[in-house]
View (cartoon, rainbow, N blue to C red):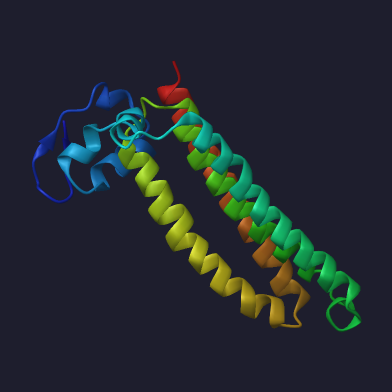
Length: 180
């Protein structure tokens, strides 16, 4: 039994004590008790999400993020005003696209291969990982790119690498917990 964040009622999850702490935290912080027991597969059936459409989204959206940031990095590298003495800007741009692509790939992986995982996990990854942290990463990357401080570029690129590693570790944890 896990307390629901909004209602204060107890929610009965199968094997709750054996779930990793990160997943327990996500399910406890999910909105309502019905969202905690709803699985990703149930949500897909409810809204009639086709597997083919999901595959198209999983392939196209991350590729778009990578293409846009790679094109921006190429353009920055070829402009002497941007590249002169500051090749450290390029990893910031590339890691920004990589973070957004990895979060979208993680959402697609959950949808396609882990339909028995709680929908609250997918929703938390979408709301926090993509919308909240993704927007913050985009907004902070702008001033970082405009600064002429190489150390700031390197630290920000490393921080983005840590965020990518955290998303991948969370997906591995989910795969170990909810794979068939």
